[in-house]
Amino acid sequence: MRTSRTRSTRTRPLRGSLRRRVAALFAGAVTVAALLAAGTTAHAADAPLRDLAAAKGKVIGTAVTGSKLTGTYGTIAGGQFNSLTPGNAMKWGTVEPTRGSFNWAEADQIVAFAQAHNQQVRGHTLVWHSQNPSWLTNGTWTTAELSALLQDHITTEVTRYKGKLAAWDVVNEPFNEDGTYRSTLWYNGLGADYIAQALTWAHAADPSAKLYINDYNVEGVNAKSTALYNLVKSLKARGVPIDGVGLQAHLILGQVPGTLQQNIQRFADLGVDVAVTELDIRMQLPSDSTKLAQQAADYKAVFDACVAVTRCYGVTVWGFTDSDSWIPDVFSGYGAATPYDENYAPKPAYGAIAASLGGTTTPPPTGACTVTYSVQTQWNTGFTGQVRIACSGAALSSWKVNWTYGAGQQITQAWNATCTQSGAAVSCANASYNGSVPDGGSVTFGFNASWSGSNPVPTVTLG
Image: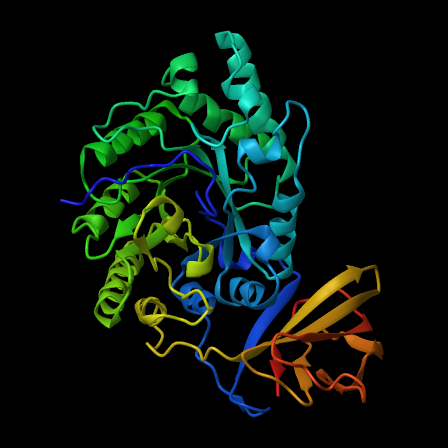
């Protein structure tokens, strides 16, 4: 039997899906990794995880910290994943620390990053017993006042991001381990129907977003997951808008529930999507090759279970690097829970995920240079574009970027690069002063171009 997880209510580096088709992912930019050995010799790379997942009809996501979305962290977050979950940026205590005073800065930053990298965003979370502002938790409210506060919060936040988010974890962690309702501000003040009310209000604010109930220790068939199952069945029968169930999956090494796939399937059979929303697999430190091999097998088991069920929408890891994991702060002596180590080197778990999604088990080299194409502004007949080349663990003494336009776009002017276009094929080389890209550095160049009818993002290569 898997050990139940003790929860912490303090703010964590990251703490807690998604159903827009890949074709409906935000347009605007594309990042392609050009993996390099020492010097400037380019090598073909295995497809990034996001491409492997898309080929399987799945989403692969990661929770992120907005302030870290630069450098290597940003390169991996943008290049390997097609969905982002704000770790803390959309929680009530962050967005409205003082009543009526809102702070959307980090949440907006993450949404903008996702749009620039052709990614979905999963909102997390609207109704939770933890990380609420003190003015709310310390207040004395009538039932009517509490209901109005909750409705206003949900409506305000969901409306702000209407049309920009694929899904919301509307209600987070409503159950105790025995399947009874958790005693919280919401349950105690509004009764069990706060869940149906929250879903209804969220749907009214953004009818296009998929709405989830999210919980932990519900990955296998047990009393808690059965209570969640019965709730979803009841909500569906009542016509309450509920689109999916989130299984957090904060797991312990060697303890992936044997009934995981069965549990995913039974929820899917209710007519809802299922997403693994916060996957990490912690081990007792220090890590070693045996533990890392077991962790890889565990990650593969989780992804295999999702791949096997059509209505399993995808898997989100709760932070992709050990340097951004909440585990060491909460579970003393445990850590190394994510697919990348603290230095951003992929662990065996990375290869196991890739293999489950139909790729190879060979992880990408640590050293890489990436090229990112983005549309900065666009008007009736033209647009301004930007290309950024960034290196981590590798360096360039010169560079050339190539792409092919698919809708007749024509470059009319370029700066910080020499660009030529022959038909649809574009080639841009460094200027005399910016060919060198050091390890940890980046260069950008820009251009103006014309377009008519459509302006699809091209596939860009560095060579």
